[in-house]
Amino acid sequence: TPWANRLIYGDNLMAMAALLAGDENTPSLRGKVDLIYIDPPFDSKADYRTKVTLPGVEIEQKPTVIEQFAYSDTWSDGTASYLAMITPRLILMRELLADTGSIYVHLDWHVGHYVKLVLDEIFGKNTFQNSVAWAYGALFKARTSIWQRKHDNIFFYTKHPVNFHFTTQYADYSEGSLSHYKFEDENGKYRFTSTPGPDGIRYQKKIYLGEGSPMTDIWTDIPVITGMSEEKSGYATQKPERLLERIIQASCPMNGLVFDCFGGSGTTAAVAEKLGRRWITSDLGKPACMIMRKR
Image (tube, rainbow, N blue to C red; front, side, top):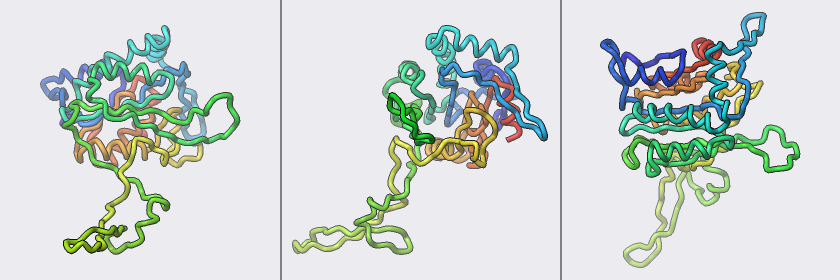
């Protein structure tokens, strides 16, 4: 569509309103988006200034007046103002979503359980499919007075409770799980089981294992972006490409349309581009849009 592959700088509420409205040159995207992934602020009260590195100089890009107002409004009354910010945006996202579409909302312990109640209300409890735990592991194993917090939650909802696009993703078999899968040929691993024959004698039956073990809703194999990561862009809350690869491959068909209105470092759009999907992304922060445009 004319809207596809577009980076929008501005308030995502207005951006989504424009996408829904369309005009004489660009049709409405109501019900046209196959996959929405958002990684909104986690209500952590963090200061999201971004350092932008240019040749020979590092610049601390402070928020514009509009950006400062948006952030202060988001945090002014704590969780209540955060929910007042996110709720109308989720309502518009549902309008954009295709009948077979999915939305993934990436949050952590700060506000995730509150936002899930909002998602239940907007999308319907029966469209809730998974709470994926992205357990990215302990980078520093220092002693703490509580259990170390080392996972985010990604809430997976669909437009329709049953009829939605999903392609199963597979993990490699562990050595332990392969202990009784002792045979392999050019097609992969096989296991052999005893199966009763018509004469009552048990025969060995060859069963093809397939491409791997279907993935669960606990993901432990994707580390966070660190200072040594090759894909590091300089954006504080950047998510790894492997995380978005898994989500996009599972929930967006080839040539489908992916939307991320909290674009941040641009991982969603970058991965969608690599995987042959169309994309639209937006962000209110000028540093984020600079990084996304460069990326």
